[in-house]
Image (cartoon, rainbow, N blue to C red):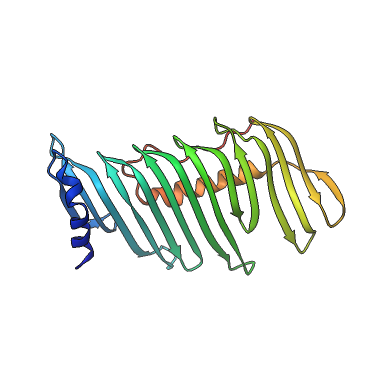
Length: 240
């Protein structure tokens, strides 16, 4: 049984409870291929409702092959439930899992990135999980960020709060840790703890900027794969 038939059977009972007659589309979509279900509104326009899948394999203007994928579901034209995004090229790979509630990013998020730097002959890995409330990051942010252990926290308003830290072990300074202490968006301390040398030194805070760069990557490289049915990307972290 092919994939289209499996999906139709899977959602047959689901659509039976709806007053609108649902239809299926399986064909070209923004340069790639898509399968989705929909119903027609009073003006005859398609309202996405139910499962959605999209895939694009192409060659960039620079001659490099890449692949985009997105899979999730819509509810009355808005993204709803869990969505999965995927990007892959020769040297760059990204995965994103996002929870939506009526078009808003709301709930659990997991982001994974692998980037091979051909110039410096090294790779950078990011595997990080966090939560959002109506597109705004809140609570604990934890994982591996650009190859280093990372931990941060944001308050209920999305402001940096409590201790932020990243642990590094490099050839230049050995083992060290960057620490920033925040109080609801106000910086109280930023220092680097150089364990190898047994000393601390003040630094310019940078972790919010790094996290905002990641948010920018998610918004412009991942969420834009399928923009339809979204009320916007992730909000950036405000820094005083």
